[in-house]
Amino acid sequence: MIRVNLHEQLSGRTARMPRWAAWLAMAGSLVVGVVLFLVAASLALILIPVVAIVGTIAVWRLRARMKAAGFGQPGPFPPQGRQAGPAEIIDAEYRIIDQGDPPRR
Image (tube, rainbow, N blue to C red; front, side, top):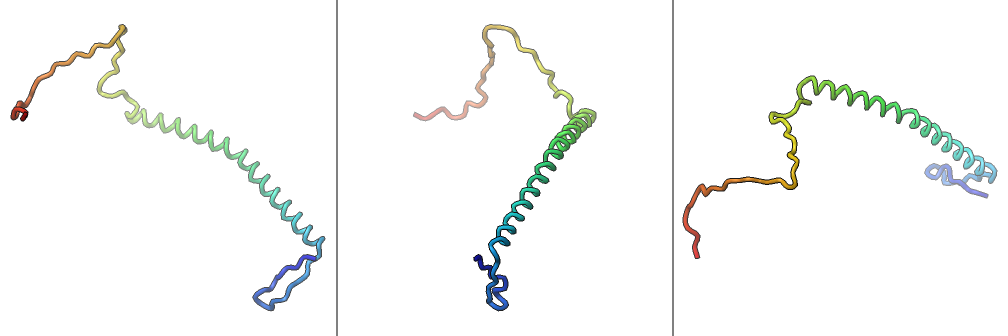
């Protein structure tokens, strides 16, 4: 027999619960848990694609508005194409700007 203390603060007496009632309570709670899980999973299967589609449309409209406002335009320097060649040559000119004090030895 399973004993459940229902009123611990009030009287301190224990109430006896038949085994079939305990099994029935466990089975009922299992059924309620499975039903809640299935409802949540089906709701997720419906909402995830809807949220993805709405998000895609919102991003598409935001990009169109940003482009209309001038944020999608290229920068002040136009992109330059790369020259076809075996190697890139970097040419530079070096000048000494400040001589300062000569280094100490």
